[in-house]
Amino acid sequence: MTELIHPDRLAKLERMREAGIDPFPARGVDSTPVADVQAGGGTNEEPGELIDTKVTIAGRLMGMRDFGKLIFAPIQDRTGRLQVGIQKGRIEKGPTPDWWPERKFLDPGDLVSITGELGWTQKGELTIWAEEVKLLSKALAPPPEKFHGLADKEVRYRRRYVDLWASEGVRDVFITRSRILSHIRSFLESRGYLEVETPTLHPVMGGATALPFSTHHNALDMELFLRIAPELYLKRLIVGGLERVFEISRNFRNEGISNRHNPEFTMLELYQAQGDYTHMMEISETMISGAATDILGTTEVEFRGATYNVQAPFQRERYDALFEKHNEGVSIHDEDAVAARAKELGVTVAPGLGHWKLVGEIFDETVEPHLAGPIFVTHYPSAICPLAKPDPTDTRFAERFELFIGGMELANAFSELNDPILQMEKFEEQVAMKDPETPGEVDVDYVQALEYGMPPAGGLGIGIDRLVMVLTGQDSIRDVLLFPTMRRQGADESEAESEAEPTNEASDEAKPAKSE
Image (cartoon, rainbow, N blue to C red; front, side):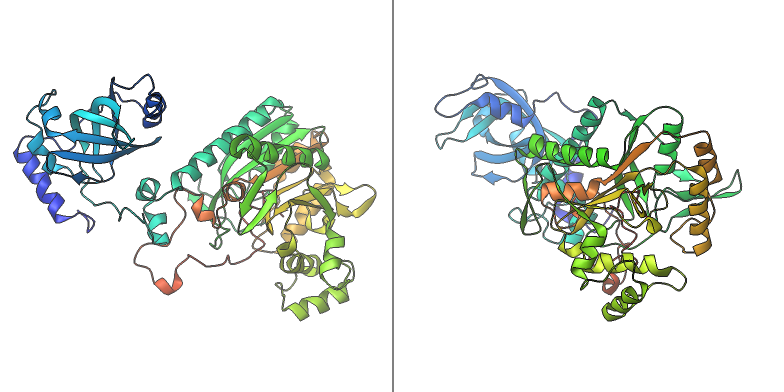
């Protein structure tokens, strides 16, 4: 037992057992969803087809108003909430005529089923007049105060199993999240994409720039990494001839926690043979715009106090032009000017990581906050895009974009590098940097796959958690994760994760796993 159990409820539990009442019966009931009952009730002026018929609902008892010989109680299931009326005289004529004294065993929070006649009260409220009440599960912990739900955010995240039914609007967020995922799958399948599954345990970390979680496989006596990205495996499938593939995967990055970061997160990655980064732009904006229209009924979304219109097409701007605009005309190619700007901003990188790492850090600090969007930032420097194909008109830049809304990155895509010799060189450069966020060894098997020939292809990654944040208007990533990563209870509150920033902003879980 834990401290949540209320002693009065525990005492009731014992009395129920003494009376031969099972507080946790083994069988449920066949019930009708509350929303369907409400639909069948029509209106007070125009009663529906279920009025004056017997129905059964099952759900949580959200409160009780006891008037002596009459009880009113709202019952809530996954689809809605409906009032139940329990009259002493009516219940005594039902299947369990001796039930009335047992009403004292019921408490708010208990799971019950109600069978009775559906009707309208004199005050115009749809009500089931109970003829039979069954206890389905006794709640030993009392529910939160009914008017405020769970007010403490940390408690909400830790006890999502309460938050979902006790706090208004929370369940709707996760229903919407499920619908967004369903829309994405349907959209991609309609375009000929095949959903696949790739390994979660990787022998070589790769496909993104991030710190991994590692583990040891005893039977093989080898170190493995929880995937930071599925990219390299998905592109192996393009080599294998599947041509259009996607995966909605759980990825893991061993880094900080904030309102935009969680160590375990969900990504969509897709790859298309004969495609390039422009195809990925069209897919991104069409899919996001369509999800908003189909699920929300509008392309205007409220996010962090501002309104954004996600109607396609989205704005497009080049990386270098935005850098100069927000950094006093400094060119990304002027190493001295970039170093001076970094010093002015107090931006530093680890020794040996070089000019382009510094450019990226300055961009993150000075440009990203201004990217209201939705906006595609295109043509990133090739030096920071080891998996992207260089722009043939100017190889200093890569055919790559990132999508931003509200200053937050949602997607990353590029024309895929398919030259095995150049890819090997770029991998070797990464390894030589000895950056803990880059692979410690070359993924030779991936390069060998490219040696068999990979067709021209475009690839896209979208951070599902962040997309859901935008489309549901949630400020924190933890509000769109059913069970966000939390510090163990009892940890020093001064070190609580609730507002902690990630250890390194460059390792961003919603930077599509393709991020570099």
